[in-house]
Amino acid sequence: MQNEKNILDSVAYKKNPFEVPENYFSDFSKNLEEKIISTDASKKISIFTKMKPWMYIAASLLLFVGGIQWYISKMVGTEELVENTETMEIANEEATMLYAYVDDLMLMDYLISEND
Image (cartoon, rainbow, N blue to C red; front, side):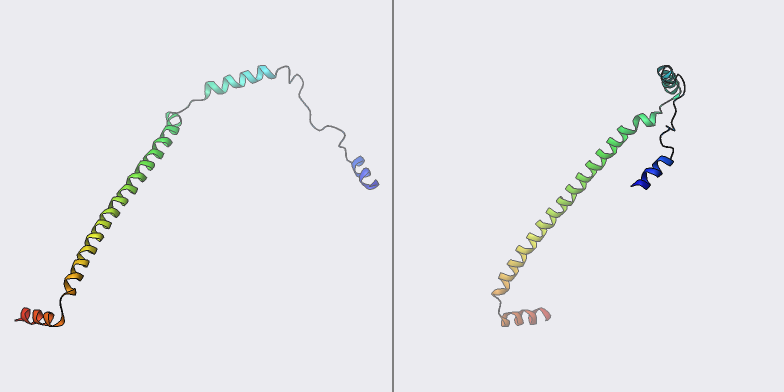
């Protein structure tokens, strides 16, 4: 503990290394106003910079609308596929019911008569 006190005493930390120029705070407001006026007069804002937020909004709306249209087109295509599948299932059921009444002899007669 004693060793630490000696180290702190040997370091010149008691003297403040930072200094403020003379009359800094008395001229501060005047200097600040001059800097603000000089930066405002020389700064020109381009049209692109002014329009950038509006372009971001337009792009996001286009993506949103495009996504909705894509989703709706996928759903319409799916509905048509479901309708076609249901139609095919009904046709398969009708064919199954039709062939349920056909026995082997009737099928052989049909095949023989078709080849003749």
